[in-house]
Image (cartoon, rainbow, N blue to C red; front, side, top):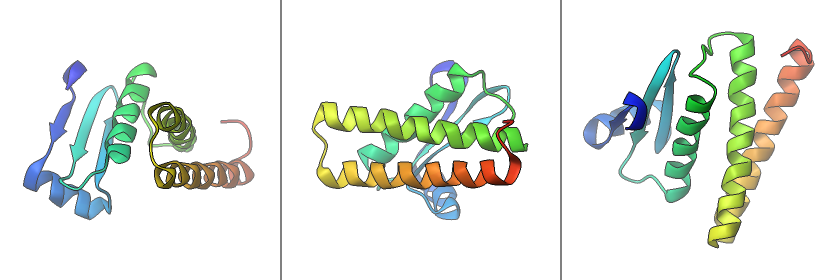
Length: 124
């Protein structure tokens, strides 16, 4: 991958993704590029979302996420990714089912951000 990140596919990806309960994942690493893991059944939506996450983390400098502040950063990046996916889906004519899934995912992340804000305040 660009910027020294790694890409995992095949049997190793299948094992990692089974553990994560996902079809694709971007595993960030503080201080540098992380790992993009793509399973054999990943949809275009799932792959593009993880590529977006790689770009987001590259843009913000691969920060440390093992803190409350890091959790806030991660959730905000998820919301931003869903917004980007919605723009892509509409521009590229993706199916209504894909648009609906992105919309539901975005709502879930907004709810998560609200829960975090209620618990920890607006200081993050």
